[in-house]
Image (tube, rainbow, N blue to C red; front, side, top):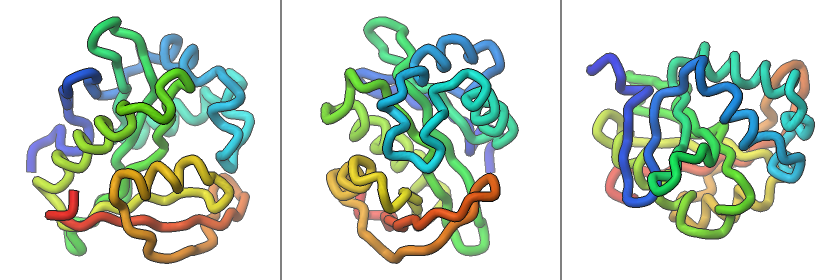
Length: 174
């Protein structure tokens, strides 16, 4: 398996995903600093610089995070991440995705998900998406891209237990 499997560069028609680097912090924080982006997330205060710094550091440590950049302007639109790769089960998770409000409800999320799914399905058979049960916007986005609701589960994150819904896509369904 290639070294950059979990952090590829993926180019689409209107966006490009590139591996997250330390130098991206300020531009990515600028995109993330809108409180409404995080309203549906368990960590609703990620718009605060100190809280976002923790997320950014975790994203760097994951070695699976990518920045979403608008091709026409070079503007940072958000980020996404591959995580929980299980070679034996041929599974991978996609998540920690956020986008600026300006592109909500448009084609950006679908294009990002199409790019990451096409890439992931070169290596795995199943892709999982974990969405907080209260995040109705993200659940609707999962259904919009054709993901199937699998089950619900309590998940602990940073000492806080939240109820998550698990969506999945199988190779050939994308």
